[in-house]
Length: 410
Ligand SMILES: [Zn+2]
Ligand SMILES: [Zn+2]
Image 1 (spheres, protein in one colour):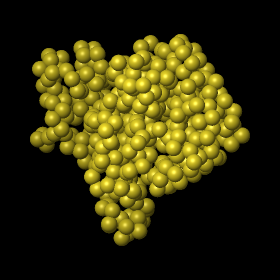
Image 2: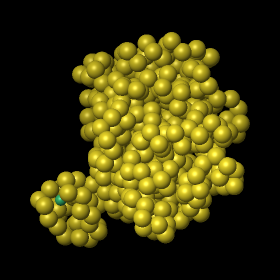
Image 3: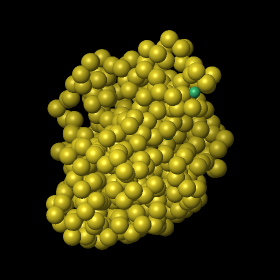
Image 4: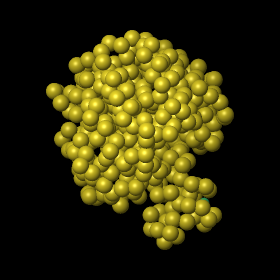
């Protein structure tokens, strides 16, 4: 069977997350987004763990709430500030890991994404010891990522580099970017939302589609390891240009620079602040190949845009969090079951029966890849524009423009 999975989110026990990040809210939105399997995030946090335990447990590593299956995951920050994603086979494995890092973490009880005063290699060894999978999170972002501080998996994971089975691409990169780097060719690419809010603009804005026999942890594990006929069959996510760190840009005034310009200026913006190296430029520095070399196991990558963004654009509404947008989004989801269906599969003439012509046309423009993307950088998300309609407002994808609300989280 084919399942869609979003394997990186944060609970309300992590910093800067929505209060709405409860298992109930996630289990409400996930099926509407078309997602069957969610990773819990934050599974070393005691309070979040208590809530996970209340779900129906169908095997050692799989929990059910409503239609949604949850597997145990956490993101941790190592002593070099590199973020790692870890997937556990069972509660006891997560608990054993927790015990082993407890003396090295000061915020284990207060932050869902704990800091651990250990090297990546040590953390990977502990993960391996409890039979968990581990790999770098949002591997190319200019802060808190493996390639922000290192030039190879070996530098970070040492002898454990071979144990790494996946890399998370992050919102500012796609498979074509990562397949320019030779050492990543053997790894499975994960596309995940890293969402801090359950709102459908954020949750599952990136996801990975897997071939599995059942929607349970062990099958997802086999899919990440590409064993027993399981494997990833599709990555779906932002156009890399939509990401906050796609191009090199000042993190204060958001002026964009080419790589050469930025280098000439010694990564100092004309405003005096620092230019953050974009993922595009970082990958070019690291690249083994000028053109991506796609290994035979690599699935396609489909570029998606949240439906609420498309609706907001088509309706000329400034924020995708508005009530009108939510109403139109609901109409479509009620008629066609989930967002992935609406965005990718339902024929346009059927969409027309339920929604406005402008929304249907915008979805068509998206499918025909006619949507214009203005690249993000320096911490500011990219922007999308519909083709051939100057009257339509530009909706910023970034939190700066959206109103302060529960949904004001990345
Ligand atoms: Zn992170
Ligand atoms: Zn600046």
